Image (cartoon, rainbow, N blue to C red; front, side):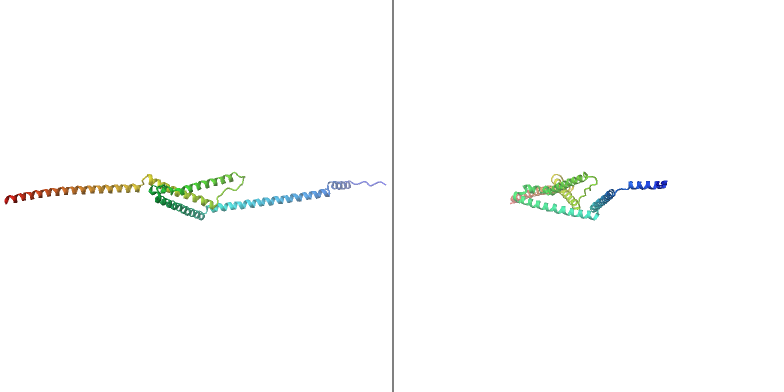
Length: 252
């Protein structure tokens, strides 16, 4: 018995079925593919979480940097820092100078006015300024070093912003330096130069002394003339008395 011949449609359906059977993945391949997809999905989630964490960290650092910058530029904070630095500089300056004056007094009592500490007390009172200058230069160099380190760091590194305390200390050292420099210049001026007031006082003193000398010479000349006149009158009276005595004796 002969087999019935297949129609073209049947051949087409069988061909599609064979193609589908041969192209369908095996269960192992499907499992491996599913596992790979899950691993890729997990890695993508991890990368996303890491990126979000880094973004939040950078945002927090940017906010902290902005807050520090705002804190250092805020008017009330700057005014408070200036007042504290100025007051602290004056307290240290006057305290150290009080100690130097005590040493100068001890030097005068032990060695007289020629004692070194006593004769140079105007200059020793500028030593707090030397201390302030040394501290200011040292702190500024250290801040510059920190700034260079931050600038030489990796891209996106946080720039160096000094704290309020560091800025206050730097300003305190600068003010202490200025106070000492002012003392030093005043000591140099009083020792080697004359200011306008001193020149005026000196000129007035010279004029006063010259006037007193002229007045003394005038009084001396007047007294000399009076003395000469009195001597002449005395001599005249003595001559009259002598003549009177002579007439008296001749009449007897």
